[in-house]
Amino acid sequence: MKKILFAAILLVANSFTNYAQNTVVQESTFPFGKENYTAWVGAVEDGELAKDAYEKYVEKKLGLKTKRGDGKHVVISEKISFAQVSSNKRGDLLFFYEEKDDNKNGKLDVAMAYTFGYDIVVNSKDYPEEMKKLETIMKNYLLFYYEEAYNKQIKGLEGKIKDLNRDIEKNKSKAKGLEKDNDKLAKKVGKAKAEDKMKLEQEKVNNQAEIQRLNDSNGLIEKQINQVQSEIAAIRTKISALK
Image 1 (cartoon, helix red, strand yellow):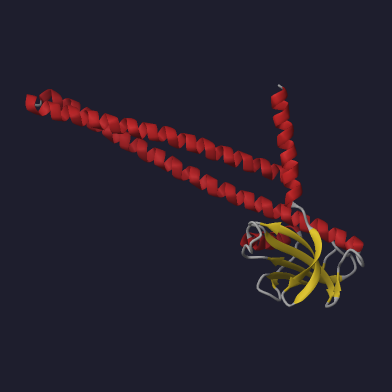
Image 2 (cartoon, rainbow, N blue to C red):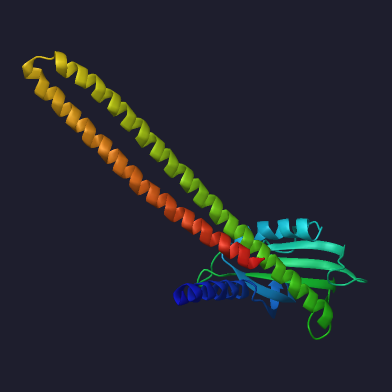
């Protein structure tokens, strides 16, 4: 009982740790194309997915449109009324995503900034309230990104299960065909001459060995499916921890 309780506590602790790691951001000066702005900076593993998730997040959760900004990896929502940050000032919401790993142990930079004008950038010193709100938006985006990333993993694993189930069905079909062949061979043995019976019996034995191999293969495949299903369950646990 103690072991079960400890495992449950460990699972919750690990989930909380993952949640905290996923949403770690820091305020820093960051290049957005040709300009440097104060921004909230976080880390992801997939730059292209980060861009796609950001565009979906901004549209679905914030009700904003995006376009490419100044720089290949900059996405911008321009001259917006953005009450989530400021109720009385229009501005530009800027997002940067790093496309490729630059020797950062698989981590890629993402950054978010909000500007009221060309040289008026939200920061903790001059706009502490607005910067705090922007931090919340950045963290919520990161949670959205990781949920998208986990769902992408699940989709890939579900595709793998479909492929494995197809392999099982193919093996079953082959085994069924061999069983029918053996039924036919059994009838032939009864009518065959003595010199042909041994050959027919050996063919039956060979077929039965192949049937057994196919059945054993399906047993191994089913274990693989169970393992993949466990991976999916673990990922769903991570998704639940994000919410």
